[in-house]
Length: 559
Image (tube, rainbow, N blue to C red; front, side, top):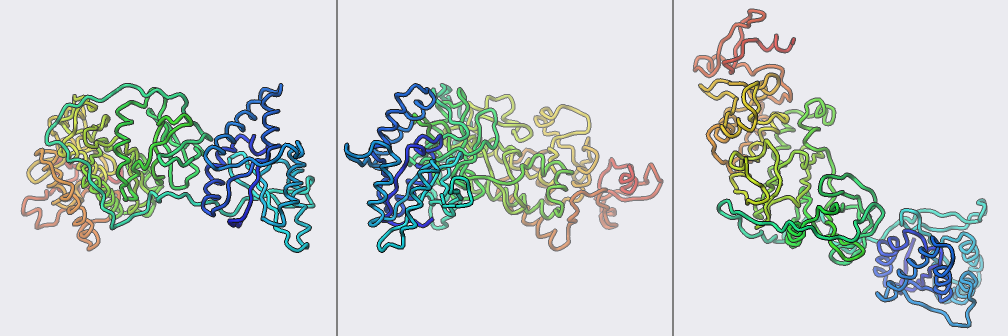
């Protein structure tokens, strides 16, 4: 539908009483009128009087709808988005008044009526047959559907009522910076530097009292006062629910009652002061407010893709989801994720809660980090965390009361890299032995290195994947998980790039799920790096890097 500055837009009683009228006006119509410099919506005096009569009527449901429409009209008038017209001598029946008004004004302006009444729409659109008369302007009609979208009306002699409705081809673009728009020249001010040591903090755990919690179909406002409709629930968790919104690029998290705490509100106030222009990071862009003006959640860029767990960290699902992937794709994915985390670290933000379910993968080069409101920012700690990403220093601590160190983040990142290259297997998982938490505390890393033999490496593909890793990757993992070193993210990024280069040059195997150990060459065996064995099952000779391996790869593959 084409809009021009001289259009006059009227609204009928039927559309004002439609359930989704407020959404349609604030999300689509009013922004469109403002964009094209069109005068406010016109409410005829007879329409206002009809609403008052219905509000005083005996039908309670109709009375409630009429009263809601009156409140909305008053709000539209007070904010300059609507105006009342009409005289006391006008016909009190709205439909008759519209016919009179449109007959008078169609020589001066193009006219639009917003109405649900098919009979009224047919009568007004029929006036267009007089367009042959010189100077007559076009009359158009719009309705509101059940979802709150604006639809067009057209004459249709073949239909029972003589009219039909159709989708409008265009919607008004929001006057908001696209949350995925990246301005390379914009300088993002980092948050305050991270503390140098663990510092106890006390969070304000008081619950924010909320009068109403928006649900699917309801309207919320952003910080700038823009109205946004919650279109459909995408999912829910312990803290709240996430909704698709009328803004295609945004989703909205609405906190459950009793779950929005004072410290969360303060943290969001701080987080939205920065616009992190990285499409991989679903950073909060604005608070979301209910009809009472209470902060109930926040808006963030929409994410797409499959979660690392289970779709990447469960081999059968990985092969089904990304059937063409090789080890090269896993390494590229690692690099992509590290780049996003590195971006956050450069702004003094720690993920804290590195959770493989909060990293969504679209492909090896496109990922999304979600649930950013849990990140550690300045004096707001990350209050949650899951094994196996917790560093040994954090076991037994109340996470909501301590600020994490960069070393804690480094441990979590190293764990994530290991699990990416081993399809979800945590580094301290053992074949038998102690509980995983005890292995973490003791740094009981089971994988072999040099003279250190394998001690409880999980059987199956994990052992084979380790044997195919380049020696410099194995060395880095041992430095972290055995020696307790804290490798900065930049060193991991360099190692991953080196590994990717080796794969590209053919120096390392691209096999995603190797079915056996990597066999050492003769020079490695002579140097004591590899070992000669006789298979206990078939009796054949084979070579291996693993001192504990007693069966050749061929027999292992036949199990």
